[in-house]
Image 1: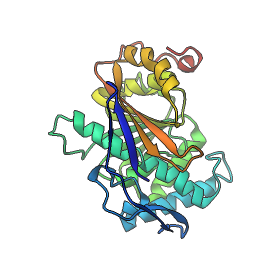
Image 2: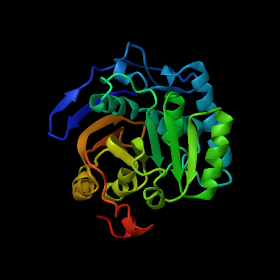
Image 3: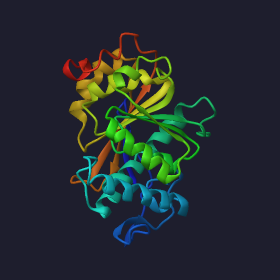
Image 4: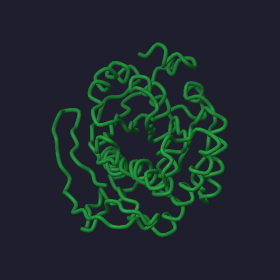
Length: 284
C-alpha cells in the first residue's frame, strides 16, 4: 500500500514518489497481497505490514487471531476472512501513518524530526482500529483507546495483553464525557478516528481532546468532499481548520481511502463537547 496525492487546504496538490509493486505471498498469513519491492521514500515506510519487524508482525498476527475468535461471540467486524482482515483493516490502518507523521513533523516545534512520545487517542476505537495497529507500528508513542461499549473494551484489554503492548490504555466511556474531563481534555497530540461518524459529528467528539497545535485525523471513504464541506462550520467553532486531504490506496471496494487532517489552532470553547447524544442528534 502506498501514499498517493495530497492536497492542502489552500488547494495545492503534490505527489510523493511512486513505488513499484509486485504480487507475492504475505509473510504473516501465506496469502497473496500487494507489497513494495523497490525502496520506498521515508515518509511511506510504514504503509505495509512487510515493513514491520518480525516481533511486530507476530503482534499483528496475534491481534487478527484474537479479533476473529472474539468476533464469533460479539460484533466486532463484518469482515470474517483472515486474509481480508489483514488487507482491509490492518493495511488500511497503517496507511494513515505517512500523511499523519508528515503533517505532525511539519507542525512540530521540535525541529520537525522527533516524533517519540507522541500521544494519540483513538476515538470510537471499536475493535482497536486503527489504534492497536498503530501502537504496534509506533512503540514509542502513547495510545489511548476510547470506546463506550463495555464488551468491546473487554476485548481491547484482552488484545493488549495478548499482543504484549505496554504503550496502550483503554478508556471505557463516551467521547462527550471524556472531552469534558480535565484528565483528558486537550491532552493529546493527535486524535484519530476511523469509520465512526460523519465529520461534523466526529469533530465534536475528537477536537476537544486535542491540544492546541495538535492534529485531528479522520480516515474516510473515497469521496469525502461533501462531508468536509458540511463540517467546515463545526470544525471552526471547535478551534481547528483543515490542513490537508490525502488519498491513500485501499483494498476496499473503491480502491482508495482518504485521510482528512485538521490542525487545532485555538482552545475549544468549554461548552463543547455537549451532553452525550447531542452531537449526533443536533450536529453543529
